[in-house]
Image 1 (cartoon, helix red, strand yellow):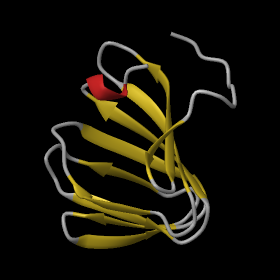
Image 2: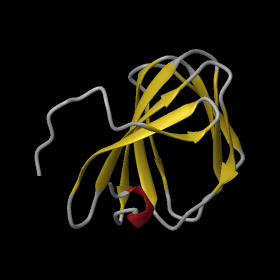
Image 3: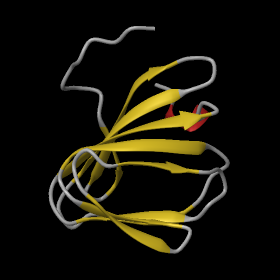
Amino acid sequence: MFSVHEDNGYHDVIEGIRMKTLVYGDKTLMVEFQLAKGADLPVHQHPHEQTGYLVSGRIDLTIGGVVHAVRPGDSWCIPGDVPHSAVAHADSVALEVFSPVREDYLP
């Protein structure tokens, strides 16, 4: 699968957080998240492994109760079923890959 960048196709996840599925295959799915300053993603968990990279901005990412101050260029991997949350301290963009594919994120 190949995808050309377009500014459309985003949808709101919760207030202050938008997402767009970029590409997916049989085993992985990549999503772009845009987080507005002040956005608060509550604690949640899912069976998917989640690997991410902060493109821009500044967030606090809590993984399994440990808070990480994330800056552009930082990356993470959250094992499946581990509780995690995030707070955006600046407008931020993160890329995340999920495995297996999140059926609820398919376009």
